[in-house]
Amino acid sequence: FAKKTRGGYRFFEKTMSLSAVEGVILETDLRKALEQGEFELHYQPQYEVRGAGKLVGAEALIRWNHPQLGQIPPAKFIPLAEETGLIEPIGEWVIREVCLRLNEWKAKGWALPIAANLSVSQFRSGTLVDRIRGILDETGADPGLLELEITESMAMDAGQAYTVLHELSRLGVQISIDDFGTGYSSMAYLNKFPIHRLKIDRSFIDGIDRNGDNAAIVSAIATLGHHLNMNIVAEGVETREQVELLNRIGCDVAQGYYFSKPLPLDRFEALAGKAAWD
Ligand code: C2E
Ligand code: CA
Ligand code: CA
Ligand code: CA
Image (cartoon, rainbow, N blue to C red; front, side, top):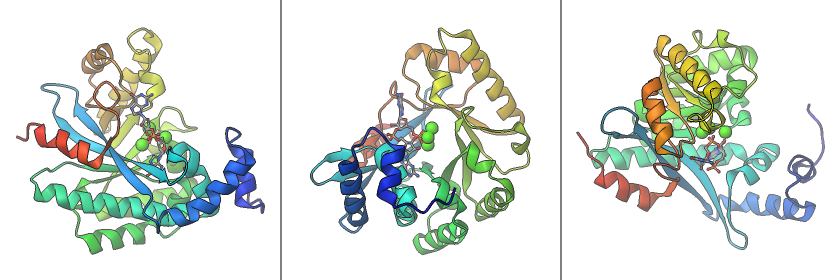
């Protein structure tokens, strides 16, 4: 897989929705984006399914405010950042931002956990644990409120994933499996790894109220996860009917457009400020 082509070319190969020209421009610009302060985190609220639907957390999702092209979604630049190695400093920026936010929110009396997404190359870098330990030390953020999202395929990544996850867990951070159910995976790793949450992929939530198969899959994942003492999050929840069904199935947390899109920081804080804190 270690093909020695230039990043821009492979980017073009992989994302056919972008023209070659766009790919080259983006790569050049991406190199400058961090120092120019063009990245921003948006926060999507997560709600308890049962009871009063309390605000229980947020997922941080990166946005790139490109000076000419406007806001570029992560699907368009994360793969490029992976190819070029730029994901390392970008990913570090994300975690530092999240930790600074955790501190600010704690000062407001909001004990709200924030989830950050890890990329494949970040996870495989060999320096992830040291970097995260460094950021936690530097910021003094509460590790228990930092949640790291990895995908199933990252967790399945042979021996080193086992070590990395246990070291992260020893730092006191929470670990979630993102897009659960879509990856190439074996259930065997679930009870061996320190995993705190399963985030059921949006594709299973979609049509859950019309499609009995999807409801059965979500229900089976929730049963399995609860058996292993994990918290179950449903992603991409878009309708009231889905929330009701998730409640009957026993999902713990829901996240999706039905509640809110990912929000810029000021709008998220306005929303959290109005939430009931008990
Ligand atoms: P993800 O981690 O699975 O994030 C959920 C995506 O689904 C987000 O897209 C979110 O805006 C979208 N979404 C949330 N609720 C709904 C809904 O009800 N319906 C639909 N149709 N979509 C919903 P976004 O922000 O464009 O992010 C896309 C992907 O980019 C993320 O998928 C994640 O894999 C990656 N990503 C985002 N931020 C970061 C980051 O800081 N670092 C890394 N490595 N990857 C990131
Ligand atoms: Ca995620
Ligand atoms: Ca996801
Ligand atoms: Ca994803």
